[in-house]
Length: 352
Ligand code: NAD
Ligand code: DAU
Image (tube, rainbow, N blue to C red; front, side, top):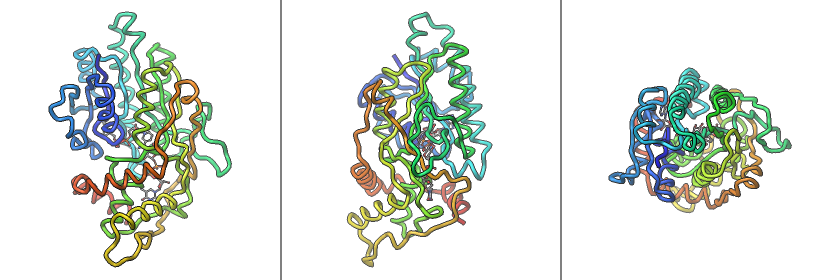
C-alpha cells in the first residue's frame, strides 16, 4: 500500500511525511512543485529511506499525477499543496486561484480517472483527504461560539476564498462522482519547519536579527494555535477512521491574541538567548499598518473529531511554543537558507 502526499516539502506536509514514516512506515509518494515555500532540506533525514519517494511536479499536471497513482497502486491521497500565505494573496491573488482552485480540480480529475479503474473493494477503500483551513468560515466577534462544521462559509481574503472554492469542489466530487473525499478544516499551525513569512517564525527570526517585530494594527486579533504534530496526528486519524463525504474541524483550543504570542516568544528568547545590552526583545515590537480585511478572531469547535474519532491535541501552547523556539534556536542554518534572495524581496515589499 502507498499514499500520495501533495505539498509534502512545505511546512505541514513535510512534518506529516516525517511523522507518517516514523509512526506508520507505509510508503509515501511526495509530489511537490517546490515553490518558494517548498524545501527539500525539510526531508533531509529521509535520504536513503525507501519509504519516501520525492517527485518534483505540479498537482495541475494530470498526466504525471495519473501515472504516479497507477504505478504505485496508491490507496489514498493527502492533499496539502497550496499557496498558503494570506498577505501574498492580497498582493497577488492569481496564483492562489491557479493552484488552490484549478490545481485541486486537475488533481481531482486525475484521481477520479484512476479510481474509476479500481475494483469495487479498492474503490470503496480509497480516500482523498483535502487539508483545508478554518479561514473559510470568515471571522468571529469576541463572544461568538467557535466555528463548527455547520457554520456557513464566509471567506474574507483571496486565500480563504480560494480554499473555500477548493472545499466545495472536493465536496462536489463526493456527491456527484462518488469519490471518497474527506475535508479537514484546521486552525493556525506552528512548530518546526515553518517558513518565516508566518507570524511565529517571522517574530523569532526578526528578534534574533535585531529587527522590528511587526504587529498588524492593535495586535488584539485572536488565533487558535495548534502544534503541527497534533495536526499530523489528526490527519492520520481522519485517514484511518473518517467518514467519506464528511468534514472535520481540527483545533488546539489555544486562543491567544497576536500580542500575547509575540510577548511569549520574547520572554522565551530573553531567557534562552539574552540580548547583549540586557534589554528585552519586547523593545523591538512595532505596530504597523493593519492587514486589509484582517479577520479578527478564529476559534475551532473540535468536538466532532473528538467524539466521533477520539482525537484530541496533546500539546498545550506553553509547551508547544517553547519546543518551537528551541527548534529555531537550534536550526539557525535552516532559517538562513530559506531567508535568501526571494524571501528578502518579499519582506522588503510587504513591510516597506
Ligand atoms: P506551505 O506554503 O508551507 O507549503 C505548501 C507546499 O505546497 C509547498 O511545499 C509548495 O512547494 C507546494 N506547492 C505549491 N503549489 C504546488 C503545486 N501546484 N503542485 C505541487 N505542490 C505545490 O503551506 P502549509 O502551511 O504547510 O499548508 C499546507 C496546507 O495546509 C495548505 O493547503 C493550507 O491551506 C493548509 N492549512 C495550513 C494551516 C497553517 O497554519 N499553516 C492551517 C490550516 C490549513
Ligand atoms: O487559520 C489557519 C491559517 O493560518 C492557514 O490557513 C494559513 O495558511 C496560515 O498562513 C495562517 O493564516 P494567518 O493569516 O492567521 O497566519 P499569519 O501567520 O500570517 O498571521 C497570524 C496573525 O498574525 C494574523 O492575525 C496576522 C498577524 N501578523 C502576521 C504577520 C506575518 C502580524 O501581526 N504581523 C506579521 O508580520
